[in-house]
Length: 267
Image (cartoon, rainbow, N blue to C red; front, side, top):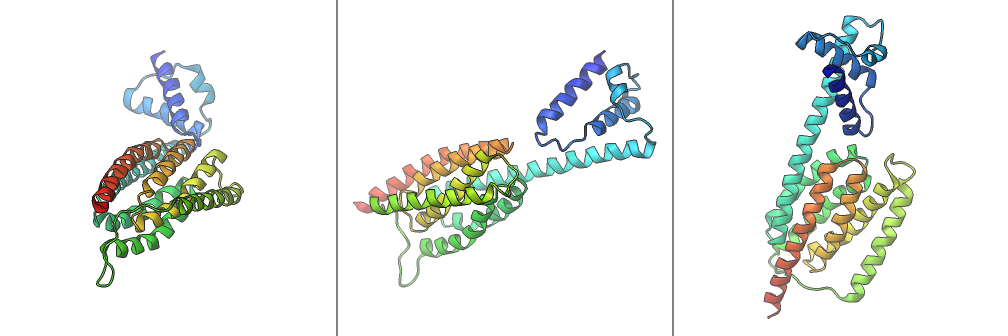
């Protein structure tokens, strides 16, 4: 009886864990049965397992089923490690950004490379496009922040309300166009596509503001992180959703730091 209950709980957890149903249910049942025989020598008394286990399978096919599950779990484990490393690196970059440290412009390059790997798998193609374009925007930002012989390093300043309104309208227009295009190709919920489009479209504007150290960049960042946390959640990426919720608080911290620097330069 304990074996039957444990089996059903395990199968339910696997179903909840894998929203995309990448696990084959017959493979899970077969591997579970073999595991009990090999490691516990417990008899299979649950009629449900017996009736749903594939019949006429050779030993090689049974062990192949176990190896398939092992490969899926190992790959998923590696993916989560990459995601966790991406989260830590991204938070570090944003904190350096809040302090206007030039190393933020350098460490963002490996961050962008990890974005390409992680978000392509999640089918959040707006984030992928944003990461590709941001490589060039970040090079421009590095030059602006560092300054040169003929141009001083950029300082925090405000933009005019008219420019801010125009950029917001352009961001909404770009998000609408990208959402219209991607809903035909991406196999993810429409909500995720729309919020991914908002993140991408406003991201280009925000990176331009960041390059020139415009104070309003953190306001745009707040909207983007909120939108993308919803997009990640809708695709089942809880780690990445929590990551962008954390970035919301980092953006609030960045806004406070940049506003303090703005007041200091103004006086």
